[in-house]
Length: 152
Image (tube, rainbow, N blue to C red):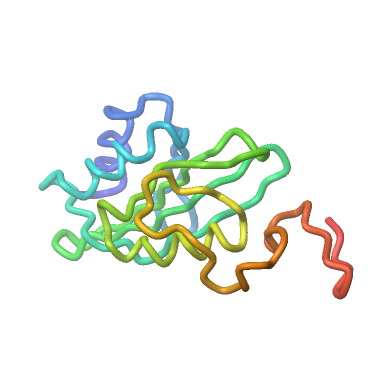
């Protein structure tokens, strides 16, 4: 499936998705409420068969947060990036995709640990890199680091 067909596939399922062609991958921005069902369809539909989640990360923007999913179909050899937009910074949360791709379990724990994004229905959501008594989320722009003194 080429990028134009992937674009149409996504827009049929999430008409309000913002689609763009990045330097490497077709990219789609969807609201976090729509992300799980779209991602599930992208994996299970024989036309797309995105069976490989090769990167999952978080991004902290001034007005919102995102979870970014890089997907590949090892069957069809096509790739896509889905950006799940979370419209709140106060208590950011979205559905886990560990029920779709098992490898997401550790990726989501890392994003939770560093950005504070909660993945609803995650089987074991706890800190991965930092100690349990760590306060705050060091990759967030509002995190105060008295040692390194990086300001945004």
